[in-house]
Image (cartoon, rainbow, N blue to C red; front, side, top):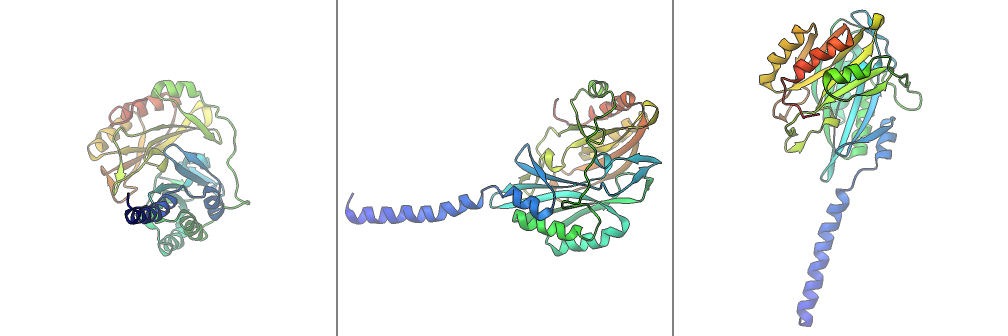
Length: 301
């Protein structure tokens, strides 16, 4: 190669390096420790490189139909972060008392986050609790800071002073539950046993995958109550044609349907979340949940 052409080639390669290197740096995973510090809570890296931070409302003493419920059972605020190209996205939901809703919503909007839903998950709750779903895109630490600022309008425990859920093991016959459901579960604290079931098809929002660890999965929580019974709650993630068959199956098995609604705004396929409640024999309730799962396009165990 002639010297002139060699010079141009070297310059060209240099320009390519200048263009490529920053894009690689921009796509690097966020500093999750910095995100934890910004939000004031620790988190865990989940499947699919989702970094999830739980913010359970351990400060609240809530009953449903007179049954005291544990924070991991039905009071679990969370934030799920994922790096997408050169920015991060976050989504989750916040457990709020009625009087906390206006301030937290204003804070989310002021911080550049979108409010995607506000609604109940359960009925006959005392004190009355609502759930605010949100989403946002940007730099991960800045998103965490905006979320923490919004949560300052609530009593959500954050920082070193935040309470922690009990790590007591479940007194339930979890093998019976797993056998009835045909799926494995795990204890998530305070004696609560959880089984999750992902959708079989890919779920996206504006082309970005929405993964189970981000909250896009069917959740079934079991909490032991009196006389060998268990309370159950959670939500089924459904497409439109599944809503009424699943509701009918739950009702046939004595399980209350407490809410049907969206959580996101632009998910594809369009998803509906069906929340439920019952307090009865755990094995019998698991059989009812299994009957409903069988009517959905769920991933195989």
